[in-house]
Structures are given as C-alpha cells and as structure tokens.
Image (cartoon, rainbow, N blue to C red):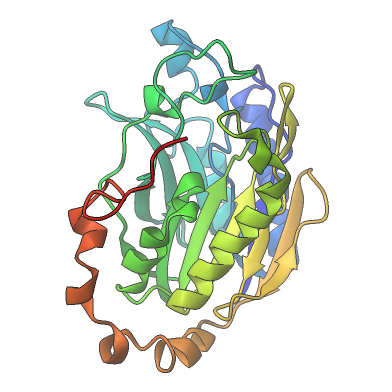
Length: 309
C-alpha cells in the first residue's frame, strides 16, 4: 500500500484548532489524491509544542489538550478520512476523564474506526522550570508515561506506534518487534538545540535517521517518522520526515521544513525477508542472557565504573 508521512511546518501558539485541522485536511486530501491508504501526522499535531512554556494556569494549559477524540473540531477529519477511504495516525495532547494527561497518538482505520490509542512511554525533558535554558522542555511536567507498547492488526498488517523520544530507545522497537510488528508509526517534535549538551545539535538529523533505521533493520519492520518542523515560536525544530524499509534504507524523505507529503509504496511482506533470516528471533535470540536490560536502570552498577569528570 501507499503510506504518506504528512509533515507539518510550525503551528503558532495562538492558532485556532479549526485552522490547524484545515491544514490536516489539505494534507489528507493530497495524500488520498496520490493513492495513499494511510496518512501519518506528527506528534502534538493540533497545537504548538507547548511544553516549551511554563504554564501555571490550568485553564490555559487545558486549552492545549483534547478531552475527547473525535471532538467537535476534529470530527471533520474523521468524516473526511472515512469518505476518502484513508486511515491516519494523529498525535495530540490527551486529558482523560479521570484527570490523566498523556502525549497520545491514535490510529484510525480507513472506515473511521479507532484501532488503537498509544500513550508516549519515554517522556523526556524536565518537570520544573530551568531559567538558564533558552526555552523549556517541560514534557515531564505536563505528561505522564503511558503503559507500554502494543501492536494491532490494521491496514493488512501488524502496526505499532511510538512518539518522538521513544524512537531513540532500542527497547521501543524490540518490544514491538517481539510482537511481530511490520509497520512502526512515529510522530515527533524535536528542537535542534539540545540545551544540556549543545555539541549534539549538529548531529540532530543524523541521530534521527540513525535510530529509526537501526530500529527498522534490527526488527525487520518498516518505520515512518513524521515531524512538525521549522521555526515554531522562535524555536527551530528538525524536519526530515522519512519512510524507512525493513533493510534500514531511507526510501523517501522530506525536502522542506513546511507542510509536505512524503509517500512510499510499502510492501509489508518485505519484513519477513529479515524476520525469517538474520533476525529470526525464535532461532537466534537468547533472552536469558539479556537480564540486565530489565533488571537494571543504572549503568555500571554491577561492574567497574569510570569516575565522573
């Protein structure tokens, strides 16, 4: 099938939700016109990346969150997708009825049915204001970690979801891979400036491709990574949306930092070229040798350590 990565350019802090949804509709229609059956939107697609701000007023914060999906302003996206026979993944901030806040992505099938609701596991950043930063990254203030990684039968295959920082962790892909995943959908908002270590800034694009390509190859799965990029409210974020094959090859990549469609023909059967050979988990994995992965969180706590500098 044809899959479209629906990259977005910046979303202003005061942009009305209806205005943003119109942009999503334009991307959806463009993708459908070009034969796509699945359109993948970025993380927090409906709003600016609000964790860059310290927000103490509950009403102001709540305005960035969705309490139902679809809601009054997003139902038109569901209706149009069903009319076109195109499914989608949409990232947004979710406020549950019992008061939990998650960085969420929903997967919607071609008939408009919600297949899955994934809540971001690896929540990055910090919880308290750090005035020395040029801008904040307060995801740990506004979101709690989700329960874990699941796969679902959808779009004729086995699909899993992840969000932004999840893509940096090999455990994300391996847990999905152990469930037979054939297509991993990832939305991201990634500031190019990394305040704790600015020396990494020049490698932002390299790291983005590196982790997704490695995850694809080592688990025999397609990976679709989709950005909200460009200069948003003065902060430059990575674009470079891309679609990666089970061999770890980038088969399509964005060329702008604006709203842009990146499409590729995705053959899920290609996953099994790797799942049945070099990454035949049943034949080659030795889980009893990997206990440290789940037993420890502190590197070096069981062996020699190098003094901090």
